[in-house]
Amino acid sequence: MPLHTYYSVLDQFLKDNNLSLTQDELKKFMSYFTIEKYKKKEHLVVVGQNSSNYFVLQGGLRMYYIDEKEQEYNLKFAFEGWWLGDVVSYINLTGAEYLVQAMEDTIVIGITRKSQFEMFEEFPQIKDVYISELERALVWTFQRILDSTKNTANERFMNFMKNYPNYINRISDANIASFIGVSPEYYSKLKKTYLLKG
Image 1: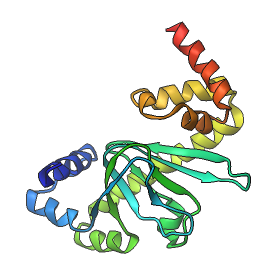
Image 2 (image 1 turned 120 degrees about the vertical axis):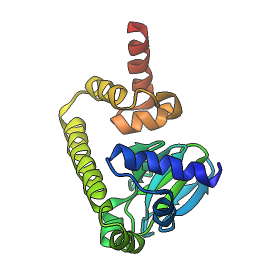
Image 3 (image 1 turned 45 degrees about the vertical axis):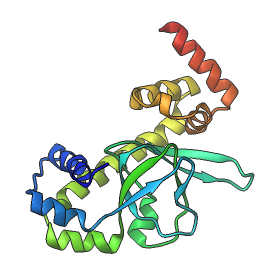
Image 4 (image 1 turned 90 degrees about the horizontal axis):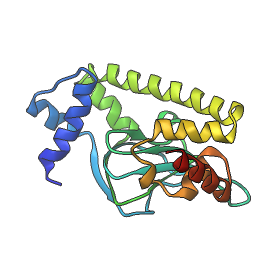
C-alpha cells in the first residue's frame, strides 16, 4: 500500500470526526505513528508488554485473554478504521493483561503514550477526537458487560450479528463462539438457525 494511501485512510477517519488537516499537517501528524505489518496469527501485544494504541488500515485484529485453564476469551474485534489496544496498559504505562493478535494479514499504525502527548502538543484539536473515541469505547464496554451478564446466548448472538454484520466471514466460528460465551458446537446451532430463517 503506497504511503499516500495510508494518509488517505487516516485522513478519512479524521474527516469523519469533523477534523480536516492539510497535506503537510497530515504528514506531520503521521510522523507520530509507526506503520507496522503483521502476518495472520502474529501478536501485536502479549501479556506483560506495554501496549501501544493501534489504528487498523487493512486487516483484522482480536483482543483476548487466556485463563488458568488455557481457555481463550475474546473481548473485542477491530477492522479497517477502528482502534484497538489494551487501554489500561496504554494509559497507565503498565504491562498488558490482554493479547492483541492479527486474525488475517494486517497493517496498522501504532502510537505510544509518549508520542500521543507529543502529538497533542502539536495538534491540540486532536484531543477532542481522542476523547470522543474514549467515550465510544466506554459506552461499548458497558454495553458488552450488560450483554455478557444479562442476555441469553441467542440474544448475544443476535447482538453480535447486529454489531459486526459485515465482518462475520472474517472471524472464525471459534472466535465468535468465544466472544459470545458459548461452545463452538452451540454456536454452530445458533448460526444454522439464523441462516435458515434467512
